[in-house]
Image (cartoon, rainbow, N blue to C red):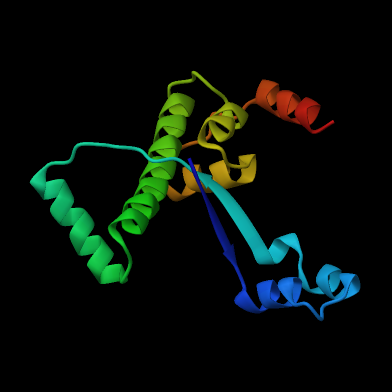
Length: 136
């Protein structure tokens, strides 16, 4: 497991400066400027075609293969979760709230996705009552 810390260098300079006071540190250093992500190494096998796609993506974006894979995975996984959630919604397995929970988005975002994809609403009074209860 690795920790990736991304921050504004001037903030770190202020934070670790010998001349910086506690109030300087408190004023300059806040969580909106520093993000620490827990990262774990994952190994996977890829075909030559898949490796070529990753290489081309990394080159086109001017980033490392690891960054290209992470970005593509985030986008692809999010899209697949939304697609799966909307399919279950259409099949009547889940309501709009259930679809949103499955996809990890808000109900409003899921409704917008459904609308953008031309998926008709099967939102009924029971779904409305459930959503009102969930908001209480």
